[in-house]
Length: 136
Image (cartoon, rainbow, N blue to C red):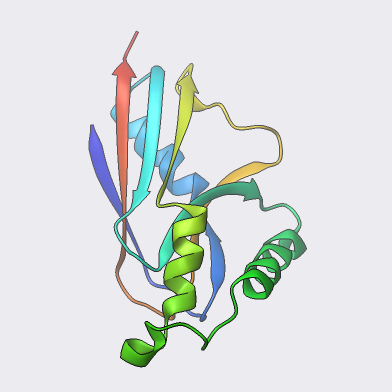
């Protein structure tokens, strides 16, 4: 089964928890055991798994990325000024795959699935959710 999530973002950089939206897709799929792949179809966004309970960890992650990959010093910046977003997205990656057991994502207690916006604000970000498995 495959479904899509569409998101609009409001900041230049932000992490958006999409776990609830993915859980709703899994419930609709009726898959009890299998895997869930979450993929963003954008070159300046990423999918990550991290803690969302403390919003400071999200800010810390963005701060760390900004220190590792500063803006405004790359060849691609001469085209549209967002080379750092492309590099950060490549480092984080466009997808995550999570096991499903008893119809639930097998995330750890503090883990959430997030879309990392790295070149916002943007409207209509597309996330493709693919679920493969058995209904048991």
